Amino acid sequence: MKSKEVASSSGKTMFIVPEDSDDLFTLRRIIKIGNMVVSDTSRVIKFENEYSRPDRERVKIRVSVKVEKIGLDESIDRLRLAGTIIESNNSLVPKGTYHSIIVQIGNNIVVDKGKKWEDLDLKLLKSNIAGTFIIVAIDTKEAGIAKITGTHLEIIPNIYSGQSGKYYTHGAKNDPNIEGFFEEVYLVLLNILNEEGNYKIIIFGPGETKRRLYNFIIDKRSVYKDISTVIDGIDVAGEDGVMVFLRSSSIKEVMSSSKISFVSAILENIMLQVSRGEEKYVMGFREVGEAIKLKSVESLVFSNSIFKDLKEEHIINMLNTAETYGANVYAVDSSTDMGLRVSALGGIVALLRYQIR
Image (tube, rainbow, N blue to C red; front, side, top):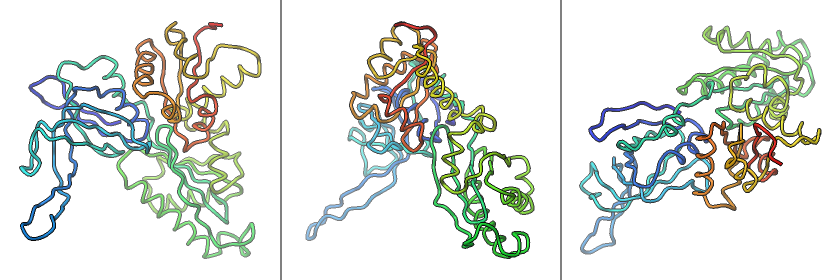
């Protein structure tokens, strides 16, 4: 999450840009009823005509809203803020009217809490994402590309070379088709890299195709020399290769400072304890809540599935309490295998500092 303090006469005001789904969860925990939020948004205006049906037009506006209702939308990548308009830059949208602001990844908002910013709010604003990782699983037939930001996984449809066999007939270096295949992969990567952010490319797959792609990219743009990594040991390409990588030990080596690596380590620790009969972990909302009250939670992981059965406000309060007591809190969604695993374990799991049962 990007955040920056801006000048304000009312107290501390923060300019915020959420960069992934985790950030929207974080914003849900930061913004409270009564806070002021400034955002560019849009609204449908109805123009009355005397002898015809009213005309409708959607206009762009910038408004300041006093938040009266806040919640995660049914879509995981949307946060809805609703309340009364305090300021508006368009006379067609007057003060005092009700309006909803939809915050999505990449949108910028200004949050004004006056002097009510808590230490936890400021801590949550400091993102610990180690950049964005681009995963490329490639062989001579197909390439799977995925973008990982925080714990969110975005998989791009496979790119196919059109080659039916395992190897090119005349060798990959001599076959012109391989150059066209690499060019397609490169253009997809270029499209991602042109977005603002800190990126690291990780390339793997069977044979030498991964190194040939690496050299192809280096020849195209030398700046990639600093952000490309080729790893061995994963001999699966395409989307399947991406999923194999996310379950492998390689993720710890090349993505050691990423959120998804931390979450993977927590889940592995819990599964190891289950197999050994140890009990320095808890699962499910009730048990995790009891452990938080005892200040015994060291790390906590929750998935978006938990919001389907429980009141959102109860969950937010519990997460904030856990972090106030020193726990590390991570959100995952069902776009990843880890998110599905957490959902299957009750939607929330926690590692404990000491056994409580």
